[in-house]
Length: 376
Ligand SMILES: C[S@@+](CC[C@H](N)C(=O)[O-])C[C@H]1O[C@@H](n2cnc3c(N)ncnc32)[C@H](O)[C@@H]1O
Ligand code: SF4
Image (cartoon, rainbow, N blue to C red; front, top):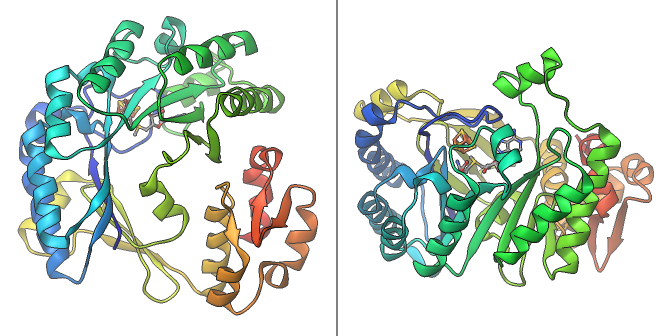
């Protein structure tokens, strides 16, 4: 498989909007976790997973809670078991409140060459609404420290469409981000995920997220401002300087094989029409499975031909490179318009075939959740 994902399910404190699997009892559980990941890597190598790896991604939770030597040992173990391409992309997600120059230099020396900083905002109001532990100064310092540590390939997260955020405030936010000259930006509209404190606040009427029209204005403002500044809007939520698109995420959107290590991690196997597997979000169960020598993951779903066709469009149409018509035909024995004549008709004018690839327009991305139902 070309891609390896390692899930680090620990955070110093849960943010009120986040439903990613992570726990805040780090002191007790984090020290023993890297050993579980190493066992899992060895187990996967013994059970048919093969490299070489083009990309490795430490995601979370808060991977920057791992000490740099633990990251180095995990990278060495991954290279030993699977092999690692010379120019492999190795990303680590870091939370600005957890990093120092020394720690970031340690990650760089350990082999991490791409850093994704969970900045979320560069203004005090939004950081407070989002319940973040770090302040604006710590965010800027984290960016500067990342540069000094040698991370030229630096990605910053931004959350927009916050309650009450005006277009002028969002524009000022984007200007502050651009001043920091990142190679890559991930821009997410705030969503109220069921089960989170933010969701309860929205349900109770204590907070109101922007309506559809305001969200659309904010999304288009982000698109226009960042593309005008030279970024390619290469996926619904992602913008990159030329050559800086995230290679790891591309493997997901292209349905290529990826191994997920760690409690809560997902894998994709190319067998048949594709299979999705997930390690349950349960640390005690994860440790028990690994100590017992069993399979830590459960099979979530196996695709049939129709399911694989739908997912190829579901994932590919999120990206600017879109879905290759010839590759689709070679894989499934028919073109997209033959497989979905009604869907392709209904999706005019948002869906087009140009240069042999099916793509959604930026306006189509705004309606993505609704439009994509035609293929599922
Ligand atoms: C798993 S987090 C990793 C970053 C790191 N844990 C941190 O927060 O600094 C991935 C990103 O998803 C985004 N995110 C998480 N929950 C979200 C939500 N409900 N709405 C919008 N964006 C969200 C945030 O930008 C976050 O940085
Ligand atoms: S946004 Fe990041 S730091 Fe906050 S709870 Fe989610 S994973 Fe943890």
